[in-house]
Amino acid sequence: MLLAELVWPPGTPRAGRSIPVYANVIRHPRGLVLFDTGVGEGSREVDDEWHPTLHPFDEALAGLGHRRSEVIGIVVCHLHFDHCGQNSLFPGVPIYAQRAEYAATRQKDYTVPAWVDFPGARYELLDGDAEPWPGVHVLSTPGHTPGHQSVLVDTDGGGVLLTGQAVYDLAEYEGGAPLDSEDPVYARSVERLRSLKPRRVYVSHDERVGGAAPDRRASP
Ligand SMILES: [Zn+2]
Image (cartoon, rainbow, N blue to C red; front, side, top):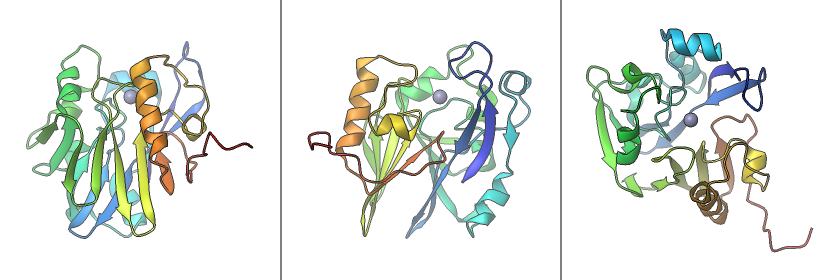
């Protein structure tokens, strides 16, 4: 579901262009699991730098036929302001993040601290891969941030991959060059996700939804 649009600030590779911010809803037999919660409200710094247009969370969820009370857990791909911004709508609900990611939020200007730590916040900190609910696989994919993670969901038709920002857009997942990283750790995470050959691929900042990864050994 689309939760926000941002505008790339001046001086960045895509200055002036719009960036969509998506979150995903996993319909698990036990209840709804969210992958990310988008951008929050009330940060002067974010408003001045990124000019967000917000889509109300409850309306986005209602558009999929759901409500907040059905949410049993949240997985955040990382804790930058545009992925955890509405965590505070869910006091008491377990939020799964990597321990390294949570530690990174102590750095200055890493995120909006009040959107990470709020009254009733309940973080479940992970050290690597985990399966918090049967069939919901949290995969450690560091690179964009030290504790980035992605999710692979088992479905009847095969795996559905939620990359988060392990790649910036679907073209990158499909083999394009990364936007802003030549880090080998980042590249290894991307290769790991490609090797899963999921039947569907969702990327946080891309409206396009992908299918199976191309087999790079096959001739065109
Ligand atoms: Zn980020």
